Length: 376
Length: 228
Image (cartoon, rainbow over all chains, first blue to last red; front, top):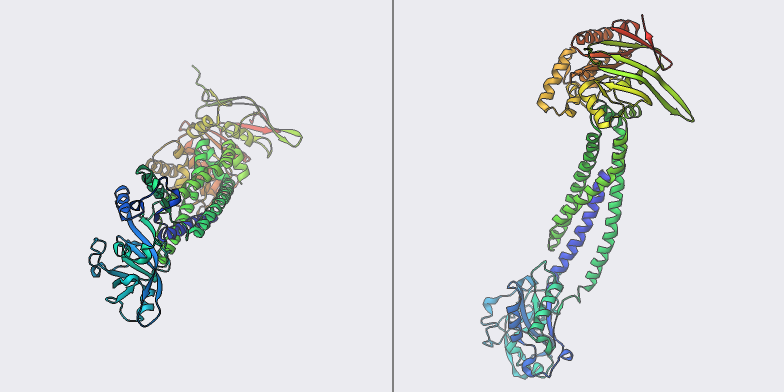
């Protein structure tokens, strides 16, 4: 039965491993659903107002649940000009509101007055690596950047470095120049039609992004926005290899689970069987003093199920504890493992009952005198 | 009106298969035991004494013949009914005592009461009273391994009488005992006589058998005439 516990622990630990990996995926960019525009999918001739913009983001924000955070963002390669050195090519983002902190961004909104209020304040954020490249160790806040077309912007803050365990679905934020969207639209590169526009929705942790994408796709259809080529997709690109891995782990785990269940049933059966034969004389004595067959049967089943449950729950507890400790130590999302505990108990119960069938049939059919003779 | 006997067996036979051949352990045994009667059965080893006792105890089923216990024919009853009869009406003392080593003396004695549905506190009270009847109340908290052979035998007797059965069956009860313990056993048995309990005892010991109201003998599986 100890082995039963160990197998169960391994099973649950495997479950916890997958759970932690899934937690990692959820915290690593899979929370995002991207609304983009594919002009090839447009079903009618488009006007300039049909191009994906902040107004579409406003429409969609009214549709989705209130705890989903949506950011309109356009991006384009731009050039920063400097007096003393060569120009620097970077990727610029124009956004209508700040990204949520939960995605690994750290802002200083108090030093960016008017961001996203439509006032067109020429304030910019720069990525951590870009700030270092442009200004070395000096504080970049308050410095002015010269962009194409004579546009000047003042640096209002630095985006914190990307956390090591977070996949950035938006690209390399450490080298990004981030502007309010109306300032971004004034850039010559953008005017030349080089911008890519998206609305990114961040769903709360633990929610299925595929379901979220489906919901947004439905909303787009209902409002006729698919006619202008808008589509919704869950972010899977950078995490796809991890998704494949979890998919394989789930498959492998299913095989392991069946093997563990079969082994558990076999071991529980051997345990119940040996229990019957080790305690044969005891059962014979009990039958001799008047225990009806069903009472002895219940004893056998109760012992088998009791031992199975105790050890499997102990194993499940250890597995869950270890899995959650790993999650916490790595800063990953801790997944609720209570269903795994219930599953372990149910499996142990089923395995113990199945394994008891044969020993029980032996006990039920045995005459007390035979049990007394054979048990000696 | 004549009172029904506690048990009545007519033509009881029991055979076992041993390889290709059939071995008859008991042949055509007929017997009646009245209320309060003490019957001893003597005979050499292998004569079928224990087989007969096991049939009378409803621990085994006859190959042929009929058996009535307290007016009910029991040889065709299901196992659960036989268990009920053993529990309520029959006490059995085995030669090997058959105590459960993990239980204390009083718990061993109380074992039949569990299956009679008696509450725990009442079980303990009755078990202690039975131990008192066999002079072992002071050893109630001891386990079988802490008791002498004679004491174990008396615990087995206490277990057999704790339900106050109509019939007490004893299979070679003094086979493993020294003389002093045999005397103690007979003293206990003597105290049970006169309570209305019928006793059937299988023994090798002629002196012990001589104390019964009626003595039967067995040879080659046949129940013989009463020993004069």
